[in-house]
Length: 561
View 1 (cartoon, rainbow, N blue to C red):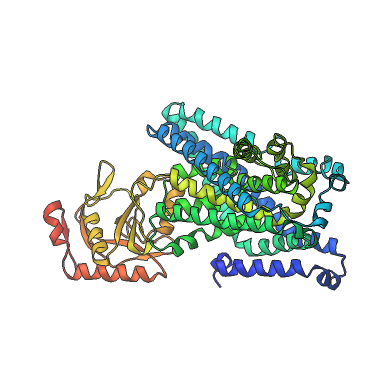
View 2 (view 1 turned 90 degrees about the horizontal axis):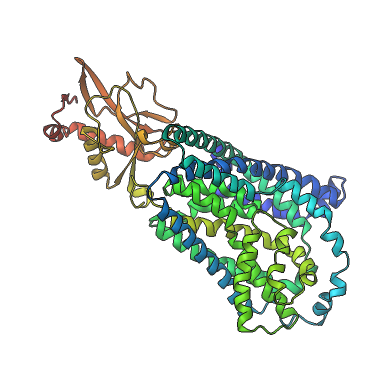
C-alpha cells in the first residue's frame, strides 16, 4: 500500500465520517470502555489536540522564514511597490465583500426576528448574566495565553516584517546569505509538515469526535436561522472565490482546480486553525498552480495572519442578529458604523480564537448601545459549529486574494491545464558541451530544440523550469513535478538517475574530447506520460530528426539508431 493513500481525499473523508459518528455516540462508547462521557471525550480528543499542537508549533518558523526571505527579496526587486499596492487594494476589497455579504444576509434573512416567547425569555439579561464572570474570567485568559504564547502571533509577524525589510537594505552578499538561510528553514519545515499530513485522517477522527461530542442540540433552536445564514454566506463567498481562483489559475477544468485545493479546504474545517493550513495552502498555489513563489510566500502568510475575513463576515451577521433580538431600529448611519466596525473588529481579532474573538464584537455593539453580555453565552454555545466556517473563509478568501496579487511564474507564463503541459526541468550539470546554452538566462540550443519538437508532437505546451535560478530545495520540488529532466545528461555525469526517475531512450551522441557519449533525458517512473514521451523520443531518433537542427547550431553531433 502506498503512503499517499493516507493523503487521498477519500481516506480523509472517511476519517471525517468516522469522527462524526464517534462524536454522536459518545455515551454508549464511553460505557463500552468503562469511562464517563467527560473522560471519553478527553481521551478521544487527545491525539487530535497533539496533532493540532504540532501544526501550530511548526507554523511559527514557517511564518517567520516565509515573510523574512520573501520580503527581503521583494525589497530588492524594483517591482515591489506594485506588489505592495496590489496587496493593500485587494485586501480592502475582500474585506468590503465579506462585510457586505454578511450585512445583506443579516438584513434579508432576519436571523434574530420572530424567535418566539420562550427564546426571548432565554435572552433576558439577568438570565444571561449568571456565571458570566466565570466564563470571562482568568481561566480563558490563561488558556489563551498558553495557546498563543506571551504576546500572541502579531509580534511574530511584526518581527518577520522588520527582519525582511532589514534584509532588503543589506549589502548584496549579506542579504543573499540571510535570504538563503530563511528559505532553507522555510522549505525544511514545509517538508516536516508535509510528512505529518500522513497522519491527517487519524487527526481528523480525533478532532471531529471531540468537537461533535461537546455540541448539544437544545440551545440551537434559537440560532437555527443564524447558523443557516452563516452556511449560506460561506457558500456564496466560496463560489465567488472559486471563480476568482479559477480565472487566475488558468486551469480549464474547474473540478480539477478544486481537487488541487481539496487539502487546504479540508484542513481549514478540520483543524479550525487558519495558520495550521498555511503550508498546505502555499503548496497548492505555489507548486501545483505555479503562482510566483516569492509573491505567494509573502502574501499568504501575511493575509492569513492579518486578513481575518471569516471574522468580518461572521461579525456582520452577529450584529444584525443581536439588534433584531432586541428590536432595535437601525438608521442609515448605523449601517455605516456596522460596515466599518466589523472590519475593524474582525482585523482586531487577529491571532486569537474562542471567547476572545467573540469579545471583539463589543467594538461594533457598543456604538449601537447593544449589550454583548446578553448574547455572548449563546455565541459561545454555537461556536463549535460556526468556527469551522470562520476558519475556512479566512483561509479560502486569502487564497483567492493571493491569486489576485501574485504573478504567474515568469517561466511558465499563464498556466494551462496540466494535461496540456510538458514541464521540463533543466538540471544543472557541470562540463556541459555546447548543446545547451543560455541567452539572457533563457535555455536554448540543440537540446531545447529537440524538446520543443517533443512538445509539438505530443500537443503539449513546453514549460521550462531552469535549475540554475533555484535554490536546492526548489530544485528538489521541481524534480518531483517535472515530466522530463534535461540538461545534457550522460551516464558519466549521472551514473544513477534520481529516485523515481529512469533514463529515456538515447536521443543523441556527442563528441567530448574525442570520446563519444550517449545523451539521455530523465523520465519519471510509473507514469503513462513518461512512456509516451519515450516513444516520441525514439520516433525522432528513427527519423534522424536531429539533422534538421544541426545546421542552425553547427554542433558536433552524430545520430545513432
